[in-house]
Length: 134
Image (cartoon, rainbow, N blue to C red; front, side):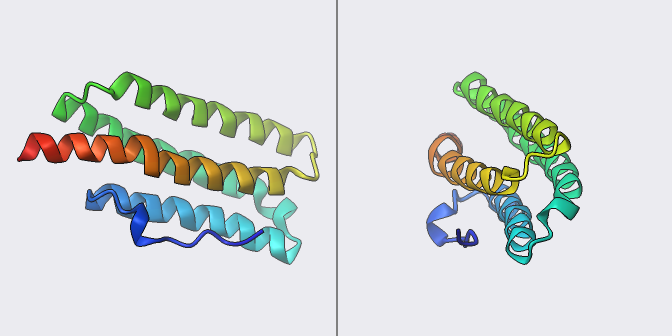
């Protein structure tokens, strides 16, 4: 398993959102580093708290922009956000129950979801904003 490296291809062209995506990747990489050092079990709860707080902040930023721009794809996009929030809660529950493979499962899920979301629905939203602002 490798750390997630930010690539220019992940830029959606909205600086505040791109910066927040980079921070999410940093949180994922913190988990990766803890797992690589064998200390993931010591920091998982802290990382989940940080992730939950940051995801709330990030999703609120996006969802405020949906409203500001009248984004027609808002409901589907928010549904993806809600699914991610629910998954994080489920992973937290697994962590508290002592699931020893959770850190690997969590890293894989976070990496896949984040990149797919950025390249998919976040890019669609960015394209919509750019078309509105022209």
